[in-house]
Length: 73
Ligand SMILES: [Zn+2]
Image (cartoon, rainbow, N blue to C red; front, top):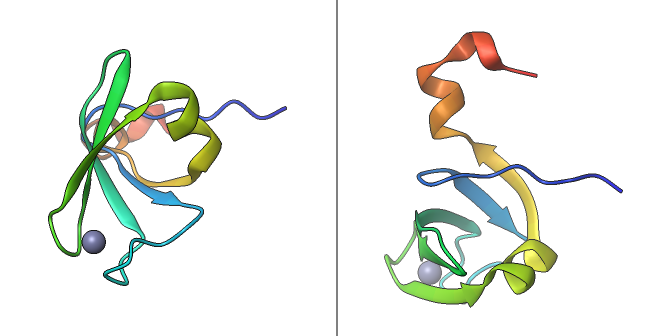
């Protein structure tokens, strides 16, 4: 099974779009729970890590990859 890689500051796409119509979320806090903020309406929500991973579709833009392009997989 594919392991998803994500980190603080990444823009991710969730399986279900936010009610505002945007499906891009930014990871603004990482810990036991993960806080993500909707790029469209700036609404933020705290979700348990397991739930976040089950709802994560893909990482759209990695902050780290943008800063260090040589690390692209
Ligand atoms: Zn929204």
